[in-house]
Image (cartoon, rainbow, N blue to C red; front, side, top):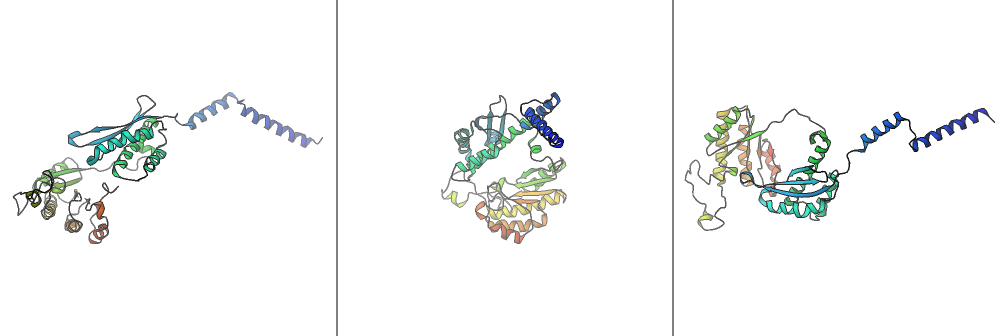
Length: 319
């Protein structure tokens, strides 16, 4: 027999026995320990099931807030998410308690994307603020659970920090430009570098024409005629737009140029009125103007950008 062939067969035989031994678990103690460590490191967390999804309805300071709570098969481990839709709070509660609970109970909490797609597509009629708010709360709660299981903040699971901090803005208000300027200055003295300024409440509904040349507040014509409901709000858009320009001018005069000023139109005036107002505010360098148009009037954004360079914030009613 050729010695080379014999040696080759011996080598192949030894390799085959080694593979068989490995397959039968016949590893040395150090090799087995290493394999166990690798197995534990790559297996991931044990399966965890959803046992209950429920809505928690709250109303701090009269503001309707809905929280989604997802409970799991691990005692004491749960997740929380925000599903607030103030104008239809009870509908969101029903969507969570009567729909999401049945759909999600028994599912694996780790499969967030699969659950999101299942919830979104199973309704047949896609989208809508009620389902979207319920789904948003569920999504947040599931990520909350994942962060707790990993013992890490969720932002670490999504790639980590890219900034050491983020500026926040606060709200300065009052019933006159002077009051708003005084309020804004107080916040600036506390260290705020961004201040949102509003006069007469959101959309200035408290002004009701009672400003400037028309200081006497009177009921609008439709209320005098007995039309509508007693608690319906009304805003004089001409008075409002003038008051906003005056407010920006006074706050800049009192607080200077270093502070960043914001304002929310809150979709309360007609698109062309909003465009004209924003053009007048350009000299006061707003950080942004929020919600100039309702979702039905999105086509006006192109015209707005052609008319002014003021930054615009938009989106919380367009989802």
